[in-house]
Amino acid sequence: MTSDHKPRVILLAAVPPDLRAAIDASCEVVAAPGAALPPGTDLAELLKGVRGALTTIRAGIDDPLLARCPDLKVVSNVAVGYDNIDVPAATRRGVLVCNTPGVLDAAVADLTMVMLLSLGRGALDADRFVRSGGWNAGAFPLTRDIAGKTLGIVGLGRIGRMVARRARAFDMDVVYYKPNRDAGAEAEGLATYCDRDDLFKRADFVSLHLPFNEATRRGIGAREFALMKPTAYFINTARGSVVDEAALIAALKANTIAGAALDVMEKEPIGADHPLCGLPNVMLLPHIGSATVETRRAMMELAVKNLIAAACGDRAPAMVNP
Ligand code: DGY
Image (cartoon, rainbow, N blue to C red; front, side, top):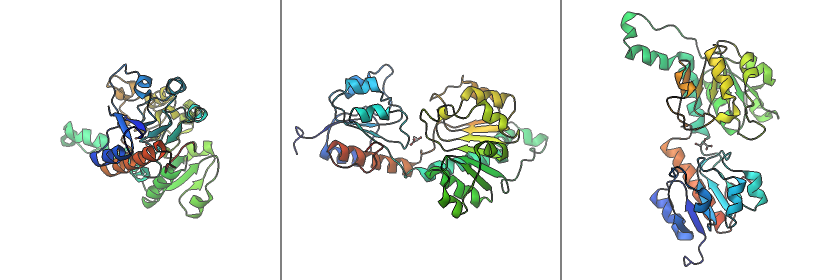
């Protein structure tokens, strides 16, 4: 195929050489600036005239942008989440949105357990204790067992189920809430269904595994934190905007809850001056749920397959709006 006939694509994510070669074989790459665009970049200008775009969650694809890019037919996000894209607008304008489901579940579930265990056993405080010389002055305060504690999972999708499986291996009781009960997970003994309010009341750890959309926006707030036990911990590896961040900060400041671990924030990245950074009872991670070599490779492979297939008019393996 000559480049005249190849679909024009842009790569807003860094692609390893072998996968880039696969893209070059079927598409004409008009630009490959990667994910970190200079501030003030007009993304619509960049996307004009291209048929496909490989994107990360840092690229905001909204309706005004789509209106300015009538040639754009596929947005392949290197992420399972696609809240950076206005999917209804894309659908209306005939733009296919693709994502990377299924390949990052274990990595995110592992990180959730790292956060849960670190919170429960005071690992970060213990590290600071040693580094600051506290050990010479006495013993580190006792923490609590993980076994026998209750994990409340809000949203039992693929990742939530993997978290449940891991928590069961630590002999935790796992309860879950989602609008439609998961008979399979219950039959497998992974988790017990719980009324939403009861979950917040009962859990020693609450972990969110919800997508962000208009229905979930700031769905966890002051009311939910007030329901939680003062000894309970809150964990979010999903999306920051599912939580009312101001309400979380207030709960952490007032010690309404014991602490939190967050891999995601409402606006990312955050700097050292963010109010969360001043709180001693929160563990903050820089959105690294899927950030392992193997998982990021698998995500990139799937996203590249999606891009090539859809740009060439074939069926993409993972479509959000088929
Ligand atoms: C996802 O895939 O949605 C992750 O949050 C991005 O790292």
